[in-house]
Length: 261
Length: 261
Image 1: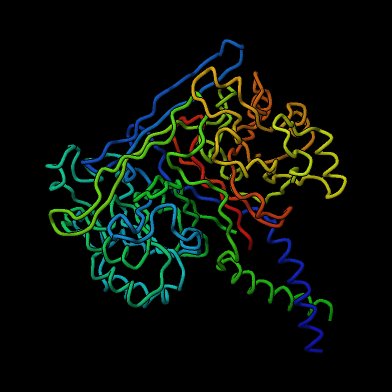
Image 2: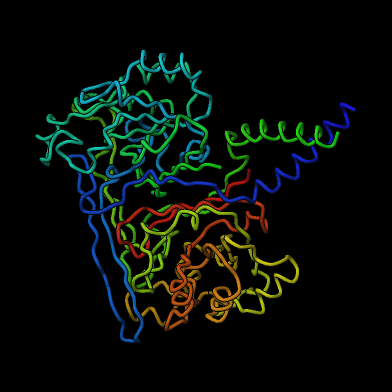
């Protein structure tokens, strides 16, 4: 009887499994800011520019519109490829897709970060989260919510400065991941990628970008300026983070969504 | 007994279902060409340009590289948003995500197209495919393989001309979807989006881009210059086609993949 029950259950499952494979997602949450003149870029980088090449009726009598655009790789919702801070590591076009399409967990630190623009997510923060919610699972994308997304795209509140140019870099203030926490993740866990709701994995006052260096040496890419993280629960969904496939790119505009199935 | 069996099967399924939701894809096929100087653009459009802003050691002693880039919206593997040929319809940032992440079917026409650079996929082609393989299912992404992908990125063979400028447009020769087939799809089926392995939904010799007009009026977006379609079977996978989220964009660079679960 047990055997018969099991085989019936398995048959049922295999039929359902086939149906599941063709089933559309139940819900998709867009975690990407749109690219426009207000997109947030590093003070030293060129912002996003759209040029209307045509808009309106053509001589042949039909409507047509098309644009050209230009930007730095690192602005708006974007990918940091490992090569950005680690020589010889993957560029934007080379990152294995299994790091970009994977189940995810979100560590929500809004309460701890509060209004502290110099907050760095610590090893203790990671250990405390795991004590409550279990170990960060292998091959998952790890998302951090600092709450800073609420200031996007106001550069003064989101970055700490609205000025442009090299001198403005010293004025950057926003939360990030402490280099020791990055080290801890690389040594103790096996994450696919990291993402967060600030302009950079390292906090605004970082001078050496050590969290970038540590993660990227381990081929772990980063997603920056991720939007709408307040709409995500702690887990139970897949993150799909597809960058523009720029050959040799150190980064790229990123379309990132959460899919519930 | 039947009730007990069913409830046991359902319990088993619900546990397995939870596990399935967290399971990574079994296989992912990249259907996107990388953006580089050789990316194929329309003769009248600006090609892709990458500018190295920095590459090498910084004054602080760590490695760093970053670039800027520029391009027309419509080149390489890209999205055509409905607004491209249909006033008031969705721009690149407005397309519902359920049209971009959906199960798909592939209609392989390589054998019929052969070397005919002026081939137009007809209503008869659609009906013949359905007679063998069943009706194109609702809310699926519909992919066409003409076989033209084998010529990418050689502009002379892929587009029919290697010249640039308005005069070169008359020299364009590549397969596409006949406007009557576009009409038939809009009237008789409920597709999420279309994609193909040529530079445009309308064939190279089109003057009025009627397939664009018909599909876009119905809010059906198009994916052009889709790569690696020879790697896909007829169905049983999900297409994920995420464009750069350009506010008001008539199109955008597109990262498109097929996911087997």
